[in-house]
Length: 201
Image 1 (cartoon, rainbow, N blue to C red):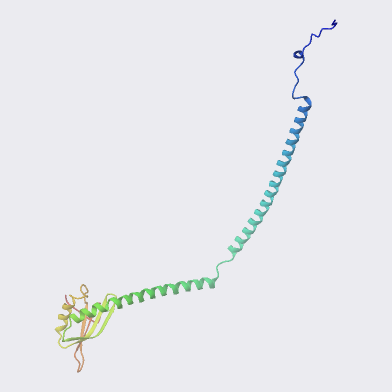
Image 2 (tube, rainbow, N blue to C red; image 1 turned 135 degrees about the vertical axis):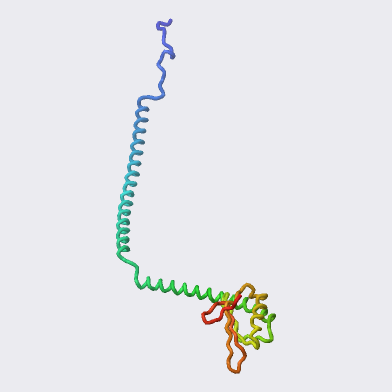
């Protein structure tokens, strides 16, 4: 026969907590340690960056000082007179050589392409009473010197030249001279000379 009756069941007991005070304390302690370590790492990294920054600033100041010294020295040091004179001389020589080269090229072109057609045309307008002793061609200037057996043959010969390569070139002056025991000499030029006789057009 039972003398005791158990009126309590397991449902009346308080629930068991998974997170106890001890576990919570340990978790908080671990979190504090992690934060402290992180802070130390960040502080050390910042200190390293600050040190490098200071070094760079010192280097920059030194380089700025050297730059100012070099600029001052460069301002005091003017160009060498000998070098300036040499450069000027070289520039003048180069300019003269370029001009000479241009003249030679022009003369070569004139010699290569000017005389051949001219000689062909002179042969086509040849006159038995006129013979040339000298021909000078310089750019657009022509000079013919020669002899003639009759004075009236020269103007006729000039008219025939107008149908040749010399078409468009005006002969500005002509001189004639008669030497002792020599045929009548003439000089025809495309430029007017103060000693030459002007032709009437």
